[in-house]
Image 1 (tube, helix red, strand yellow):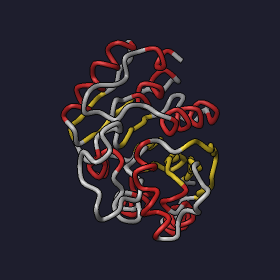
Image 2 (cartoon, helix red, strand yellow; image 1 turned 180 degrees about the horizontal axis):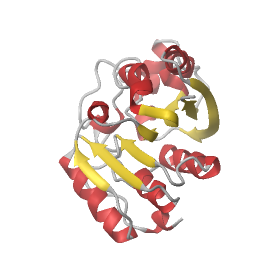
Image 3 (cartoon, helix red, strand yellow; image 1 turned 90 degrees about the horizontal axis):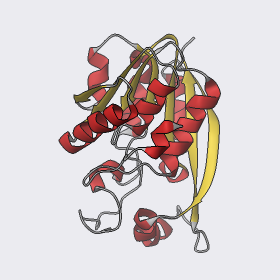
Length: 225
């Protein structure tokens, strides 16, 4: 896709990685965004929002709390020659608008140990882009609980996360909110700098066996009938 060829990164902005591309691939294979209103939560560089526009969405909104990310999204959308409305806003502010046909999100989901501080992983992206709190659920829990209110009837949520942030808990929360939720895509990838830095703590808390150096990424699709 054209989105892969533009300058999607910027200093202080989450760079598109395996999770971004897995989410885009799931959207493309689903055909769910064609002719639909889409919102990209925790948009970062805007790469997923741009992909949605290229895939035929009629309107795309990208939300992020980082001014750097909003500027990056705007620049990338301009470079890709697509219409994306970018807003400086928390993911939860999507609830202030009419429900969207498709909600996509690549939230912070990495479980972070109590001794981790900003700048502790110098080769990685900004900590706010991946810090999911002690269990990785700081954003995932409230997002899953309120997802049904963001999605229009007949619409869907596409959410990417790591196995280490408890996929079953996300599925249960989405189903409890009234959505039909299932895994629609998976990918196993080597640890990046963030998980390498957290590996000792993940082992100490029983979430990682000594020999593991890979994680499984999962895209969940949750439909509102």
